[in-house]
Length: 303
View 1: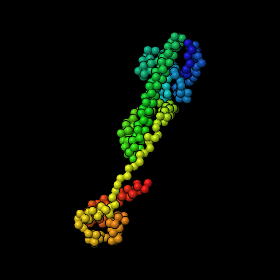
View 2: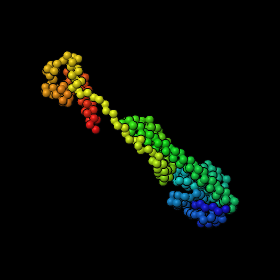
View 3: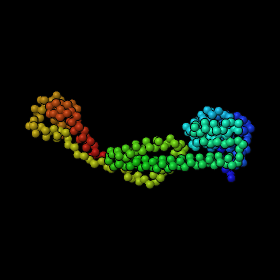
View 4: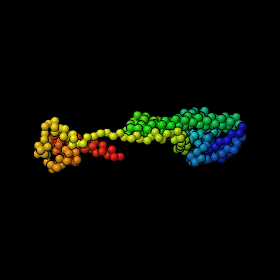
């Protein structure tokens, strides 16, 4: 059986490290086998290599240190979590030791003297652990790929709606996008940026290839008619039987300003808007809005 993966042996006993290495080399071919004297040195190797698949910790190291190492591995950001195996020294009370480690969540044990069958069983367990994590990662990547594609579709949909409605609309797609963003965030913590980048590039490239950019051209804005504010004021004056002379007496602005407005040749100024709100009624903003609407109408005809 030719199997290759990276392993780490942690033991202060050099002879124990050699015995386990020899047992592993009977099964593993072209594999990397690291050595460490204690859990601190071993932890440095684990996070430096980041591809260690199995960690063998000798039982002569105290249980608390082994458990601390186990916890750090569980909460680490390693792409694949290695399996932790306790190698049992023959002089120890094996039943008590195994019970303690079982309670801490450690389930891999290998007893000296090491036999080929037992080592092969641990290696099979290690490989199955790695395969399980790879399958889980593939599921998570597939899920995030689907959600990223849906997200890009929603962005395009919102942009298309806004381009067809003078910059308005797209709200439904944006709301869906916000909900989708929360789902993506829960998964993106489980995959690295290096894994996400090619997925995103592929989706964007596929989307761009089939996107009809001509659909995103904003439609020409329809010209909305707006009367000259002088025409509207004139209609109000006729309805109220109010003469220009009488209105001039009630206003504080110059008579020429009112005359030009009624002749449809001058604007409705802010000062006149304030006067008209006081004398005619409505609000100052109402009168100003008439002038703004008329100017917008005139500008739209020229563009």
